[in-house]
Length: 372
Length: 101
Image (cartoon, rainbow over all chains, first blue to last red; front, side, top):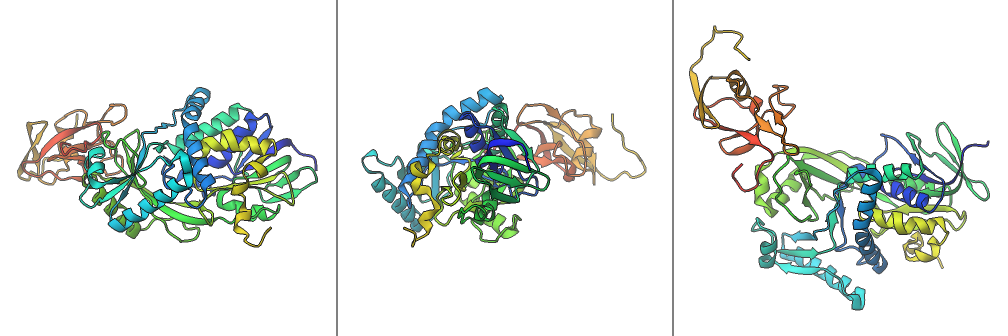
């Protein structure tokens, strides 16, 4: 059945897929971006909005380097998105803090930083472990419960909702065909390409890139791609708007440019349940108030749950199918942080076929201990 | 602009202050109703654009009637009953985090 022909189909219209689609279009490919619709889990709409470097990649040095690279690409990328779409994604890179509420937590954190420092070699790892006194100098208003923390100058944040809109807007402007409400159900290798079957359509494409988050696992199985991702729920609370108060993002408290304060960072194993619970909301609020007592005076106006897309080691999976070359998987829980690197560095490697070599450490083969 | 629909019930007068000005309300009034009868104009200005706002839904949903009550910012005037001696101020933009509203 002849259908529309595209160089590439990107399956999944969240932050990862939209960034990849934009990058593929930059490389000159004709691209169709399939977005499932409002029944999708949409981690891209539930996340905290950090562009975060510190603490990542202790298990995989390449991931530490990759995350830092994306952080460095971000200022230019945000400026480009503003130029092309008129949208300000509110990117800031003032440096970020991780705050510890017990000595045990601080010691564990410091050990992670030592490991990252040692594995970074002569380049060093740009993150400081800070005692309580130094932290209090840099972050006024800390509660007595905070014993110390870490600071990394490369950490920052964006507005993730505006980012999604900007990525899709820029992709559209580059000629990407965005198809909303279209869920890929069947992917068939056709020899030299793929046929993608949706509820209503069948698309003939040259390459296929799976960026469907948790949905990539069953789709990947159809084209010889192992995408071992599982859901991990995080709940977030949002306060009413407050006057500018917190100049730096932290791992579980940050103030947006329009004044609301996000409180978050639960890690729950509850399957595909995106709901909220009073017990977790209580814990999040209590920890936030112990960290910054002034937060107690603010009202919480919203809360939600969303599912992180977790790989077994927390690092991204970038892969091309050995059995069906031209089929790619991109899966990670850092679609915000890595958006710049995905569009500017990963997508070109998908376009020119160099991904398997250039991103070898990120292959899911790392989970197959018996594969040689 | 607003007036009470019935004069039949006249509970005891309650004395409150809005922006320092004394206002007499009636026991059982919501703060929003008491201020609307006094025609005080805007209750708040928005945190983002500074636009003036006044009560809209009067039932706790729209958050347009926010005021500062006894030093506590962002109180919904429609959900608070008047109390004798209450000190009420406009909510100007976002709440401050320094304890001064």
